[in-house]
Length: 248
Image (tube, rainbow, N blue to C red; front, side):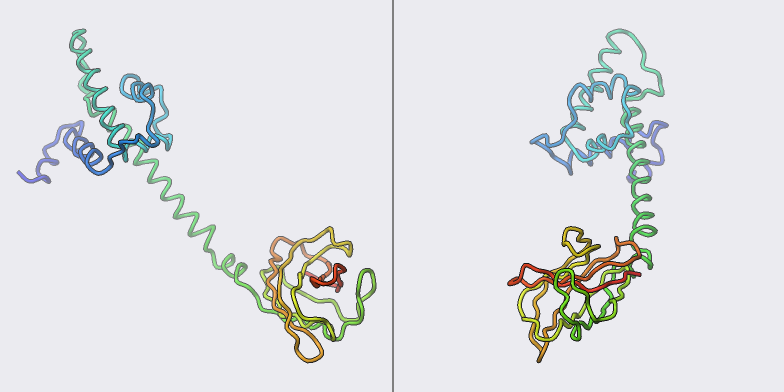
């Protein structure tokens, strides 16, 4: 008789099926260090009074991948049955030794199915929607500050306001003429005191004729639509230079 025919002739409690499942766990998932194992008292409750446990709790999935816990459950069920026989208390036909195991497995399978379905839904509808992919894709912009006048501290800039989208932007910034090369911090602030930074990035400016250019990435997705300042700070100068910015 092949294995398929054996399953077709299995009893109502699916004894053969669950014996095969137990054999699979015992063979494939040894855990001699008892890593993550369920304590003995909980396993005993599982066998004797399973209704006291919430077997849909994910922590009970551990037994499906732990030979040691499975072996302990088998031994506890054997002791339970021996005690019932000595007390001359017949175990109801529906309370077959495999029944508690089957119920736990069914609960676990259902939980797994719900979890997998949830993950698939989350990944399909919440993570990789076209809109969100587009929002996380950097947008290339050019910011020309080469003609800006002196805008240090609270002075007023002479260039039009920079306009940026509420996206991740990779900005090619042309700094004002005669700006030094080197390390810069480019930030977005709500004022000129430098304490209200909303986004920032570091970049190295390279000299290009009369001005220096740099490329910096700024994540503006968390900003609300409104007016801000674009600030540049050179590593050799603690003072920042501010330029009007509109985020739309």
